[in-house]
Image (cartoon, rainbow, N blue to C red; front, side):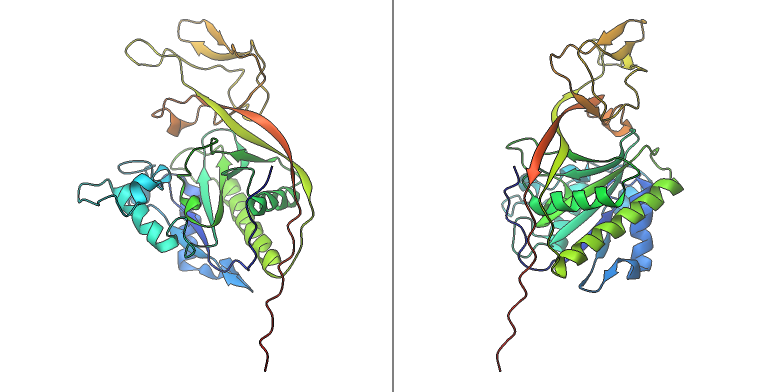
Length: 321
């Protein structure tokens, strides 16, 4: 299923972005630390650039100030034909600044790779978020991270629906992905998740270094989860919550949901059951940031697919005398 062309030159322009959401504290604190002490991001063939993506939201310890920055990297906001005005939301202005710093998106001048750091209040564990299965390089990177953490699940989540335009900050680069670690409350820093994220960032940079130095990676079989639909909470006619996530579903991200299983518990005491005909795999169950988006959880399908080998880079020819 992987089909996008793989890089044929070393990756030199790499960015690690944190604070895209200003209350997801692992990425916020790591970005701030690396801005003061960037040496940890240095590798022999490249040095990654740390970026605090949303400074105003970070200062306010809020997800965003005006609108979700991680949904603002679309052509409608970034296009040269879109006229900027003083009344534009802060995150739209910031998206344009980051597009100039790290892009422009879909251009040859864009960064080679962006790694974006996130936390979730849902029980997602260690989750690797990519746009689609068609990116050979990113799938090999995900596989590398899974091999580095055999003692814990390291699942791959594909956020982009078929035909949908990419909209995240890492989509500005030629390649990219996001780390999503949880559960962690908004505005709270947990030492275990901070340490895990720091180790994963190091493993990502080590993989890019291996690729730059000419390492070849063999083909493999992989599983990933792709979004099928979003499910809202039960609501009253006025739009208020009429129930909450059922205790039997809570914290069971990536586990199979069978037809007939309870998904909501109404305030009246009645259970609401899953009425679909196929088994799905819920993710971002009861995510705090998604209440405003009308999402109680996302339904995904599990995919199994083959990833072709990632060939070694061909050394650049030595100039003649």
